[in-house]
Image 1 (cartoon, rainbow, N blue to C red):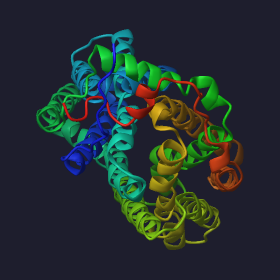
Image 2 (cartoon, one colour):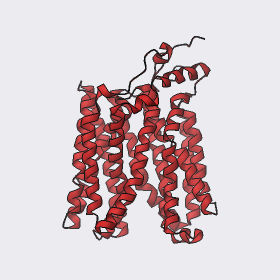
Image 3 (cartoon, one colour):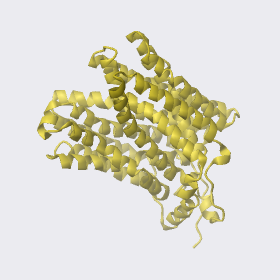
Image 4 (cartoon, rainbow, N blue to C red):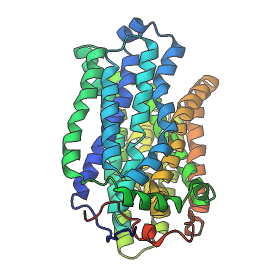
Length: 437
């Protein structure tokens, strides 16, 4: 049966849907970080009689299932579209987050956290599938800058909101409220986003289209490996800020817990603002005719090198100097130069559209791994060195590695190959599933 061809079209509501995607990312981070607030609540710890090891299991459970499901979710959205896979997964993780407040055993707690990780794994692959279908090169940086705000504001807001709800009521109410409140997001999502679930003919075309860039082609590409390195190095620093920066400010710089929370909030706000501006600035240069790969690489390298000033904060003699280097100035805020441009380059610009979902899932494995490595390695280095100098030295090394990988590996000639001889129908229909229906 011949497949009817349609010209690729872009969603008329794409900027509104982009904001929804950013809010969806923020909600996912709120539901992730709510557990950290509960683990700091003595009533929660006492009720389940948690040991330090069990607290570690509970805190890490979500990340393991999240990382494991990234590539399967990428496979799904490449074939079945964005709207319904995201809708089903969003409903599942909100209900699982709310259920955290009503379960009564440690095994049940771990199970619901694993379910949250499985369901939240759809967020990033689905977003990049949508961006690939609806934003051209001159708008990708701006779009990703806006989207990344959700990822930065989620951890900045999630822990304070959860802590306030626990103080005002209980840890059980906190989980139920934060979980169910997120369901309101589904209303505008269902209303604004057109149905892109494929018909039988379109599903066949989608399978053919995705098969033209199989996993082996991605793994054979230096660009993909360069993206794995840059995503790991960038995320290593970000996860360090999420897990260890408050403790550093309290233990080594003498700030109060409340002050550390305020400075941590502003650090993530700084990254978010710079990321949005850097993505927009790169897009403007590209729109004027400058090479997209060179422009984005220049921003990425500058951001990685700027971030290495974190080491100056480690050796600062006063708390004011440390705050300047680690919060108010280069090492954290200017890391935002990397954010949107790295995401655009290694997940969209240099990747065939047929494999955006699968590649994004693969790249997210590196991001998830960075979270585990950053938290554990920083703790071990802190134990060995008895100060935060060694953990920050490790960040310095990873940031230099990220800059080097950007320069050496992220080149057009090494992008993943599209297999020749695939059906013309699948190739022409590569930009959308049900455009024009």
